[in-house]
Image (tube, rainbow, N blue to C red; front, top):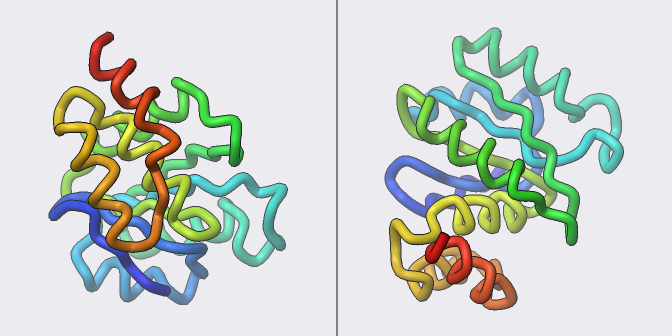
Length: 141
């Protein structure tokens, strides 16, 4: 597992396993957001297996499956709500961390400059430039 902090209170990661949860808790994260649809992965890392481990560790689990190429405003709103409702730092995961970065950037539109919302994930190799127009649109709404 590789945690990639986008801010002091939000990080992304590629797919996690139940065995990773202790390290996530030790790192200070209080909420884990699953942005990966179960249909993409084997049962041992599907949302219910991760939820059980996260909740057993005393952390909050939020399921917000994001389909690649089909991100919805509901996904963006749910990600924002997960961050707002968290008692501390949030770790969001998907296959690579890219979708978790995208919904973060979209949820922060208008709160930070678009250039920053694209540049921050780029430090970890996430290419959000194709979302510039959408971020700008959300910032204006």
